[in-house]
Image 1 (cartoon, rainbow, N blue to C red):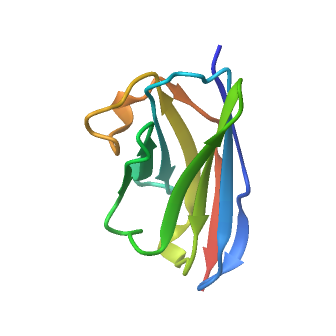
Image 2: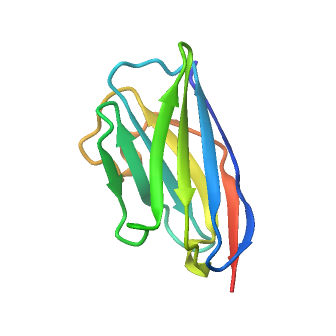
Length: 126
């Protein structure tokens, strides 16, 4: 059973940085996609960044050049990271990691993912 656990959220001032992590246990698919999504209060969930088993990366326009997604692995798990720099108040949201058991065609669409974490809160103050 795949299990995702996020960490690294917190409160920072505008212009600051945070690094989110997501441990995906029992996630050993040779071909896969992993992604970060976020949802702010009163707003729809949006795809932030995604990476696949070929290390192809995809970013929402709103975070390009500020956020970097990466991954590494062990024999039984994979860890997903999101390095967030130059944070803005608009980045305030609950951040979720998501995993798929294949390479998805539309990496920033949530309907393509099979497993989700519980989320980690990011608050950026002005």
